Length: 492
Image 1 (cartoon, one colour):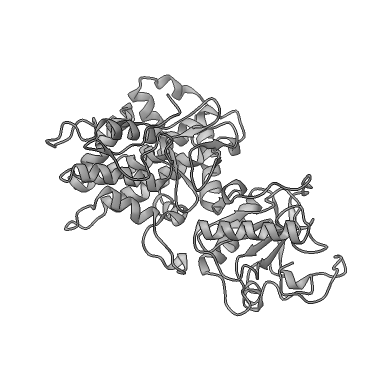
Image 2: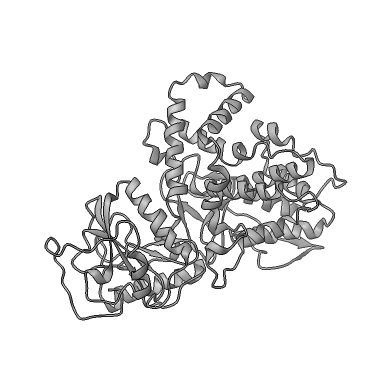
């Protein structure tokens, strides 16, 4: 399949908009714009008919999809041709998911929140929901089509590998402002992070549509996608946003699917796939159930217990200067900071990324450090940003860097607190994630920066907050070398 995708929108021989380029941008906004073009060209086309046409265009007619959704050409609509040649070619390439020999993942897009999503499982979930709404039936096939099949086949194909290697990976875009190439960070599984994100999004959006009130009709597909992917926080605490939006995908998906016996449903999906494809002999493999059980435990840890972390490459980190020094894991301490500067919280991927780059420049250029000092940085956009990361020594808590992770909240929290959602990312998710992965000791101690260094960091309000957290303790000065300098407001 050619690497050049024709993303042209031609009406009466005229090309409109910024998408008129042979080397198109692979972001969700561009995909939504294409959907809007299709809707405008076919104003009487229902949302269900449109998603079925999209499925047909991409050729997704595998036995499992046919079992739950039927043939995509089974459309009660007068149109025989919905997309012109240009739109047909674009949607075919935008939706069809695969990984090239060079490790480039196709059929994925960058969303406004900085995450990458596979289009195909997202659309399948929407189609399941629309079909259920139209027919007044339960959304049969939601979990099998959006997540269970990909997860089960990935667990099974890699059952000889450690569970952590049976999922993912994530990757990096060549340019987040003009994304065209998404390069995976290692050899892919059959359940990359983008496929899992798309599967969770499909489950969420599909269930929203399936459970609309009887008197309420589904909106246009473009409106559904905009509402979920393009929500602007405008200073809101993400935790109080009642609508379903992409920065909350993990917690919403866990609420929707966490009550299911997901291990059993993955097994049932695999048995159904083998029956439909007449390959029941695979079920005789005695390791299948263990592979699925171990795999689902890893899935829950990776995508529900752990917080979403934006990798360095996504926020535009400059290279580390020199060679990073490895940490000896698991660590016994977690140190809480505020950045002080930037002094305002960030509420979008773009704002938080700018803050990360500004801090890294300050740490490298003004202070002469090898990299941004913190291990992780917490935005108010629903995400944690990777600094030095899990494995490399930071420069965040003088005299104590080798003993613990330094986690900073973006903003000045002398008189106010970070959003409750941002606090919970660290208190309920990052710490648990680190302990469960063997990176932080189970009986770890949590300190505020000021307990170890003469500084006002992490601010009076935030320090008062963390004093009530589990694992908070006063330092044992007899066993720790604490070098105190003059009182400073900055978090270092």
